[in-house]
Amino acid sequence: MIRGQVARIPARVGIYQGFGLFDPTADYVMGGRCILVLERIPPAALMLGGMSHIGIAVPDVEVAARGMVEAFSIGPFRLREVVTPRERGLVHGEPRAYTLRFAYARVEPITLELIQPVRGETIYDAFLATHGPGLHHIGFPVGGLLDDALKRWTDAGYAVEMVHRRPDPRHGWAYIDTGLGFRAEILCDPPVGWWETSDLLARIEACRAYDGECSK
Image (cartoon, rainbow, N blue to C red):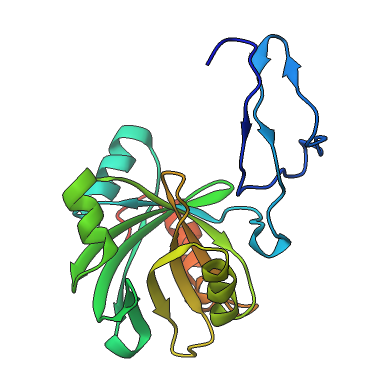
């Protein structure tokens, strides 16, 4: 693209607080730099708020967590394993049982999440086989009921790649192919979600304050 040229692109992302609203009929060139002008604002139902975490797929969460601590002083990490039975899991629309292992660390103001596929066929296996370790998704709490959120996204033409339902199947999370080079994980939890009920955050903070080996 030529410096100073103005581009117009269809947009499936909104303009958020801090940026203001542009006149979609106008051209904008500031300081000789190109600014992409959004031609339309998406339906309010699909507007995403603040992100909660970044998810990175890895073949081994313990090795990856140790590497993060040693190379970048990110940590401590807290590990857990989540078993999803067939009746509560979907992969590309098909019922699937799978097990994932997670490692979490707070990197204020969000959480860094490492994910390792353990058993069953998941989108993480395909991602690692194709790309190797790397950024897999960005997590966004959307609230409400999972089925309602899934309907909004599928009605808008997005593909739901994988679903995990909690024991209360009205809640859970799902991975959406955004078509923008990353997946969005939508999190539909009750007002007090797994993070608080599992006491995971408190454990991480206690581990952070402890000058020694963190237990799993």
